Length: 77
Image 1 (cartoon, helix red, strand yellow):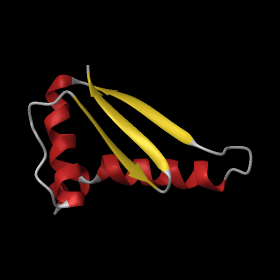
Image 2 (cartoon, one colour):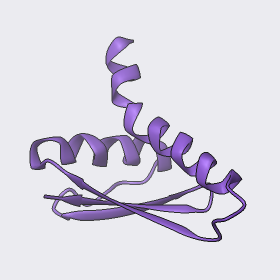
Image 3 (cartoon, one colour):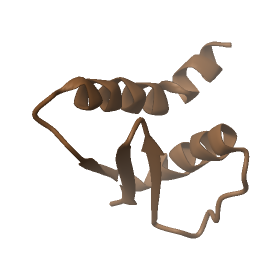
Image 4 (spheres, one colour):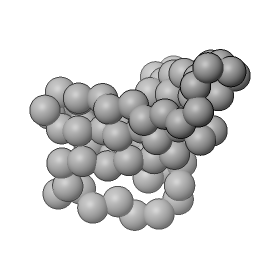
């Protein structure tokens, strides 16, 4: 269970950020680019795959997901 909590931490953090951006009356649109350490990128791909329930191409080095009208772009770096 602890692993599941750790595993979902990235998207949970993104959801909190997205909500704060959405609630800010000064911001209209948003895009967040996150550079991810190569050895952690597959964990994020797995988390996104679990969230959207669609297979993700593990060979890609960039993926994006929209959460509460904020686009999060994860780049393997």
